[in-house]
Length: 269
Image (cartoon, rainbow, N blue to C red; front, side, top):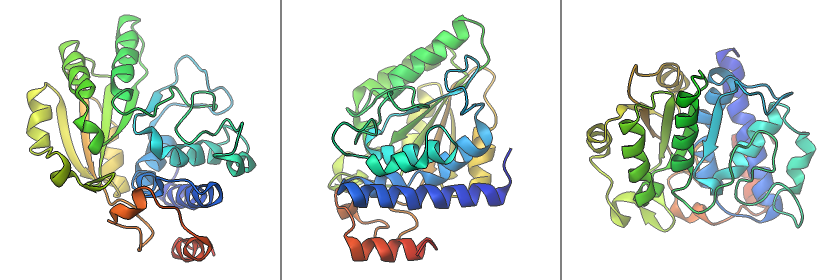
């Protein structure tokens, strides 16, 4: 288990790498990646049972990024933990690179390719069912976007998971209140989300998605019979002042000057 200071530093490095990757590739979705870096730092740095030297370890915990467009944050995390050389991050988004613009299972440490939204939770529910059927003890974690909760396939999977008492399944909803071109409320209102998830048979927790202590507490235990849903309130673009809570940065990429400002804010000038 890493120290609290180690997790803070890991989250910072994830953000720095993600910014450099998106800038170099002239890609999109940097704000979507920045909102989940603290969650990833705690998951990979403290909570999950993983071995970067043996990514296919049978007893490993499984992590699925359902909001696959935020992949630079996961690629950065995996590189920081030694799944592949950090220099490979420089190939992100290039022709023939295995670091594709949506997360790919060809990358060591990635369980499942996603891009079309609403696929990660159904897959994760299947993994959790396999775990239960085979009397295993590993856990499955699925990170979803709040806008992604518009997808009907997620609600079918929510019913399936509670019906089968998949208590080794935990979802984290990155609730940053923005999707694509507008706010969640203006696009398709989700609230009251906690009571909806509760009605679907899940154990529901609401946390600050940037508070490492709250994230750790929420992720460290499971309900005896129910799957767990963690609604993590986050800030889109977290860590870079001019990106925070700005819907424009769902698709924009930083120019040279903006990158230097962002890196300076993250103490990486």
